[in-house]
Image (cartoon, rainbow over all chains, first blue to last red; front, side):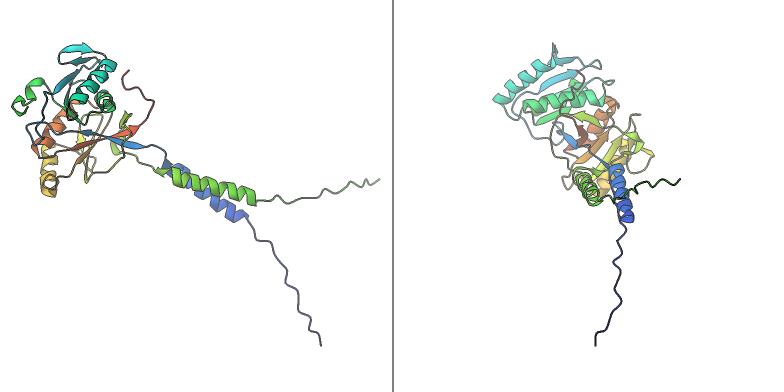
Length: 139
Length: 140
């Protein structure tokens, strides 16, 4: 005897809730994410307060609030500063660079100078308020 | 008179390609994006061309555009209080660095005060948090 079973109806699965959820997820991640890449600039310890003793005299770079630079008292452009720093670093890889920004200079300008020195290969860059803060007995 | 119009056939749109593309978009955002980092006090960190890996330090100090220092709270902190916290947490004894999240508009005088205070507290290395932008010309 043949038993006839009632045929199941195949109902289509509704995709709309799934799509809603996916779009909500996409919105959440788009709004909750950013694509900013953070880095960091390292500030070496000042000599005389825990820093290692250097071999060479420090190169002193003064930064005015206008962005103008002086290398050991003489005006210099950023490009020249970078090439001079490269020359110094070829003689002494641990050459210390002391950046003396004017009080009114902005952090962005200081980071810019540190970037230039880092691009030249400088590993020890520190900040001093003025030349009298540098403990020259350590050099 | 009744006009017999041909009945339109409603074809269902295949949604699978759409779902595939949206899933790919989610994957892209998940992999390429990072959780939003909104620094308190609306700090905008300096732009840098140095492509160094960012490593968070155990202690972060924020320097706002108002030249005031902040820790976790929104109350400005004196450098003496920050130095006390460093001593209490033993950051200097362990030779750990301190991170400075400085606003790019803050003044160098505050930066130098911080550097000097950290040196006196025995901190050897200060990491200034920056935002990487390879084509930015700082101050030029």
